[in-house]
Length: 132
Image: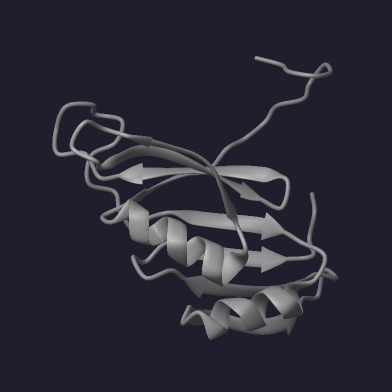
């Protein structure tokens, strides 16, 4: 399916969290992402949420116990790369929020400046200046 112009596709990472409400707070504190939409079930649990990630969008929700086979128990198993202009500032913010550093800030041999951290539930977040 194309949107916008021929050959253009939009990709939205979708991550699962055991505690999506805590994830929303942490992703804001660590990376500066902001809430766009939060959809709660009748019991107050978050079924689906969206965050603005510097003009991009990430989606997240809680683990599902059975039911929809697309979701299931996948919390903490996501890997996402985010292309940004200032990885140094984002690294400082992420580490100040307690992100587990997996890869320190580094200059790659292909010209990118990158780092990788894990969020409190184990999802891997990589940030850098590389843009395909």
